[in-house]
Length: 558
Ligand code: FEO
Ligand code: CA
Ligand code: CA
Ligand code: CA
Image 1 (cartoon, rainbow, N blue to C red):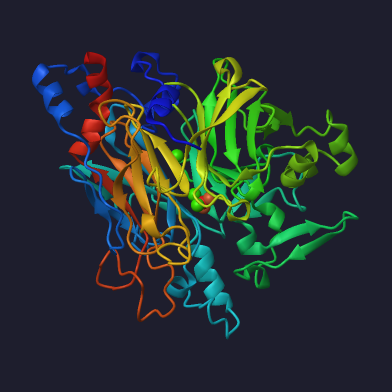
Image 2: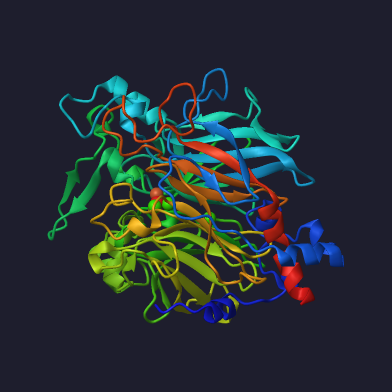
């Protein structure tokens, strides 16, 4: 798509923050947008200072380090293997983060949820997938299963620095071995409680202040059930081979999982369908019913939304899939869709085999839908489409969904491309999205480690994966500005703003992922005494974030 700054700005819209549509629960939990107290400071001196300073982008880099733009600094909060309590350690490959303060009046003390998406076996269990010369032992599988899932840790900011409160009673791990209830009346593959969560990529937050963690590439762990033309099922083996020791049904994974921050109890929400859930982004309607958006991050898969029929329910309601060509949400409803009645036994089967049901209804294939955010200013829904090399889409784009009448429970919408990745716009393969307090859009990139910085691949110009911001206001409005560059082979994921907007929590995921020999890792970030690469959560602070939070104020004065 031809990119035009003018188009972009009009697209984003410059509505004042007074017209914010973001629901209160997102505002108070710091996901986005509550005007900072500083917004009230309109002194000429402050505004002049801000206006004169342009945001300074950093250049693409191959460096094995977390590089930040001027005006930003970072501290590591937790990294792979850190003790969080006497019994538990921090998992591997951290992704989604979500911070909920204990008390809304104190944004500096609360519980941080962190997803542990998958493992780098070479460093976790010592198993080398590049030289699979020995069978994986049960001990190795147990280590791998411990290091995925998620972590709850209490964190506190003191003297400008965030730290884990070690041994706090809230600190706990949810792993691939934790029993989890299904929020559904019919058993799935014979069970109403299943073992573990895995492949936890991105997630979300509920209006009732719990975490949502999404099971994405679950087939890596226990494989998948496939059906042939005669509807005969067969089991496809997993990549990790965990089913050799733990014969759990693949149908127990691929769900949205809700975690209670206080006691760590978990439940899987069957009504939201089973697929490679990247994230789950909720909107609460005036009558407390919820709308949940979620994308299936696989080539040629779909975008879904669930609309509850009862207040605060992720069980009672209807799951829809997007026909973006005709702007329609199609109901995955066994009772109402004759085509689904012919193909499946009941609604539970429709939900387990949501991908097949969506295809039958004629949903639109998308180029790997990743993160979804609701623009706090315009109310539009943004969906990252990361790429699809099989359709010659190497750099991805961001899709904009405008629900009819601005109503999230509408069954029609308009879809258009907001911005396309590529050299012209300076980024490729958008993944996570986050809006800050001023409605600026932050984007992380996920070029795959096997293609990044390779001469024969189309990603050379971008160098390492990065974090970008698109200011909504001020003289840089509409520009894509690179503000962080990841260590070698890493991806920056899980951006989440603290409730006061002053800290950006960010995951540095899978540095050194392409390492073939443990003795010669491709990265040694974060440069601790072990001299091996480790994923870690960082807290980013600084003038640049403060400045971004004030951009809207400058615009209004102009
Ligand atoms: Fe785990 Fe879709 O990124
Ligand atoms: Ca992701
Ligand atoms: Ca997000
Ligand atoms: Ca990704």
